[in-house]
Amino acid sequence: MIAEDLQRYLQESRDSVLSTLDGLGEYDARRPLVPSGTNLLGLVKHLVGIEFGYLGDSVGRPAPVLLPWNEDGSVWENGDLWVKPAETREYIVDLYRRAWQHSDESIAELPLDAPASVAWWPEHRRQTTFGHLLVRVVAETAQHAGHCDVVRELIDGRSGADNPDGYYDLVLSMASAPITGPGTSSKNA
Image (cartoon, rainbow, N blue to C red; front, side, top):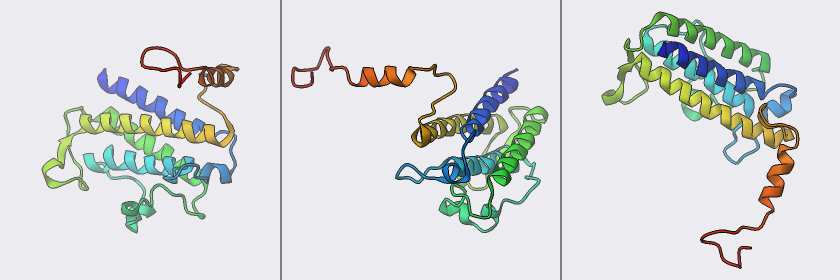
């Protein structure tokens, strides 16, 4: 039951991540809009490695594909956060969907207490469980889904699917209202 709940939450975040690409061209999907360089397609690429690594390789189920950024070592220089010109959006999204399938097979086949070993973690932390890694991937995917929402909003103002028409106007009116209440002075109003 818990594994199914975690898988459902994971899928909701996966879907949210990919929905931020809807209607965008290649330029906007790759465009960094914050000083860290965060970009939508780069976050999807990063999540490919997260799923194949934690919910595949670390539980004895190697990824069915070799990830170029792992093979050339550029993953350790944030090579998984930038999409190279030859890596098309379709290629990255297809890899992500393949990672989902591989991860979902692990979720269906492995008990949460199955042993896991994360090769890139320090020796004293390396041994863990599949359940620990599944929770980690759910949390990381949800975190990056939030990053994707913010980047998408910076591109064209589109915010999450749950915001009704007029929500942006409401936010603007609240942001321009005078600050009042405990701890404020007349200088802030």
